[in-house]
Amino acid sequence: MSLSIVILAAGKGTRMKSDTPKVLHPISGKAMLFHIIDESLKLSSNITVVLSHKFDMVKELLESEYSGLNIVKQDLENFPGTGGALKGLEFKSKKVLVLNGDMPLVKADSLKELTDTNSDIAMTILELDNPTGYGRVVIENGFAKEIVEQKDCTKEQEKIKSVNAGVYCFNGEVLNEFVPKIDNKNAQNEYYLTDIIKMAVDSGKKIEPIVVDEDEFMGVNSKYHLSIAQDFMQDRIKQELMESGVIMRNPKSIYIDCKAKFIGECNLENGVAIEGECIIENSHIKAHSVIEESKITNSSIGPMAHIRPNSTIKDSHIGNFVEVKKSTLNDVKAGHLSYLGDSEIDSGTNIGAGVITCNYDGKAKYKTKIGKNVFVGSDSQLVAPVTLEDNTMVAAGSTITENVPSGSLAITRVKQKQVDGFFNKFFRK
Picture (cartoon, rainbow, N blue to C red):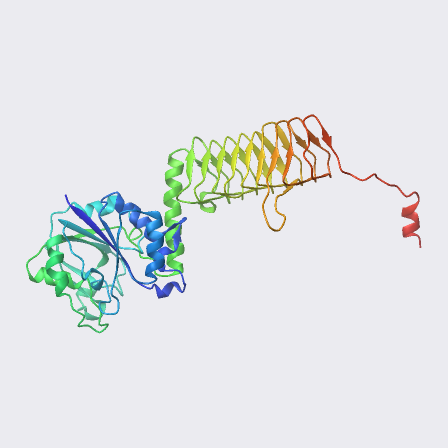
């Protein structure tokens, strides 16, 4: 079967109240438009995306993420509306699936139900207990006959619970015949895709209604809708992960990016956030820790730790209030209250409480290299660039500005001084 897909993403999305185009707002770490493109690619590589608002910006992002998309610009000035989005397009495929770029929860399996029908048009419908405000889909003998807007409904039609969900699969010839005939003779002076339904019925075409899930086919038109879609997407991601073996304590409190990957048996405690393209393998992420764009293997992180982008942590324990940034740690213990940035730390090394790598001088970042079996005492500062070779020690409270050779103890404390009788002298009445 020859299938092409058209994704309508030209609208301004004014209800989002944002300078960011509506279709670029993220759901679980990915622009909502990208979600629908990814599902579409499971069905066909022949995809057209119709844009208009901030065309250059959206086009650039699409081209940075995908290759082979047909990106076109809708002439909103002359042909506004969903029907106007198809004006000027040529439909050579046997079937054309028309989707909306603001439906990030739609899944390929549901769309395949539309493409598998033999009708001239398959249209999605929702069965709502309260359809007030929606256009009703009149169905006779199993086929859709017309879409009646709420204000035009008769008393009997108001009782209809079937409403239009806005996704269609057309026979390509039907679109080639009727798209040129869509006009804007209506109160809004817009070209409506739904006008094809009436024209098709009048010409004897069969329109098959396909009932779909209201949650899956929800459109995102405001930041409130965005939050609802986020919750649905998170539930979907977490259910799949838990069924594949990931343990989650209080899943509702956890955030997981759709690009994150989990290998083996992992344990996520409450309040954990996994952001970006992380890989978590056989690891325990404790409460309220944040992992960003990093790889964690056979390690425990947290509670309340922050692993920032481009970090690789293996066979290590990272404790509470430890921040790691752009560092590689292999078989390391950093129990609490440390900052490890731009670092390479090797096996058997212990990082004491309050240790920081001073990696930034106000102009540039520098690297700290720590070898094997190094003991760094509490409240020490390692001023990069600096290297601590294997089998070295740093005394607590030291500021290290020079390389420490293997086997050495580095200490920079000043000599302690006692003043006898000072307490009584200071507090005397």
